[in-house]
Image 1 (cartoon, one colour):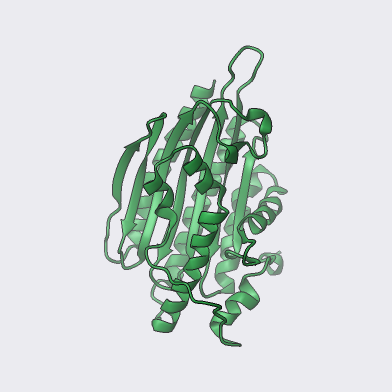
Image 2 (tube, rainbow, N blue to C red):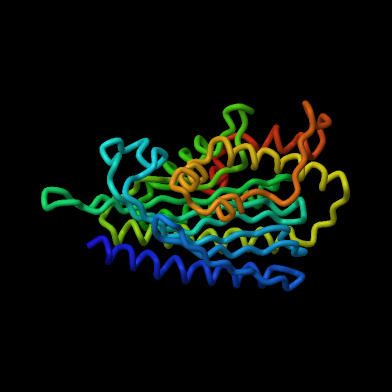
Amino acid sequence: MERDKLEQAKTFLLDYQSRLCSRLEELEAASTPFLSDSWKRAEGGGGISRVLENGQTFEKAGVNFSHVMGDKLPPSATANRPQLAGRPFHATGVSIVIHPRNPYVPTSHANVRVFIAPAQNQDEKDIWWVGGGFDLTPYYGFEEDCVSWHQHARAACEPFGKHLYPKFKKWCDEYFFLKHRNEPRGIGGLFFDDFDEGGFENALGLIKSVAEHFMEAYSEIVTRRLNTPYAERERKFQLYRRGRYVEFNLVWDRGTHFGLQSNGRTESILMSLPPVVEWKYDYRPEANSPEAELYDTFLKPTDWLKATD
């Protein structure tokens, strides 16, 4: 049974990786192509990393497919399911991180994944779940972008239950939070894990919907902000705020921890990191500046769809 689930998931994920890369190449002003790098994992499985670097639109964009397997799930995958400790597993998914060059275009992240812990004897059942989501990390905030982002997030979930968007939005706000900084990473979106409601076809349909809506939502914002003029001030602020992205991914991100704990390919796992970043000691934005507005208005849990309901 788990073989059928895996093949359904992998067929979609590989097709989606290809289509998303094509869409991003269309948005890339310099016509810079993605480089494709296939890799194998000694313990089982492998993947395809596709990375675009040094473009005019995207300073770095990574769209990674992976399917890894092992004799036992690592600690990061069993934190919420301790009864699965020691069971073999399959994990397949697509992970996306996009760092634009223009500071007025937000950084974005998305992930869709399927975990399966197959039965080991007739007294056990296959245990599976899906997870994923998408979130947005602006450097300069625009209410229009926040609203359209969350409209797509809600639309992705609604066919599978109206209760899911508020649940996954809250989960996203709580998950993408830098505890050591006491601040959100961005304006949120969706985050969910351990999802198995309605059977496998329903759950797979949810991550398909999330993936497709991410592609549309982010493309709209890139197109809207791509040609906004900027100067050194905006660029410096972008590089400083990218530091928060690095801190979250290395300190708190479960996906990074899972990849490293399962002996995944380090180069692919860390493709999420931006190519250029700066840290400044005790930086504080100038009062009433656009930089201060990011902290005062946008980096707070907000019901961005309240005015549209």
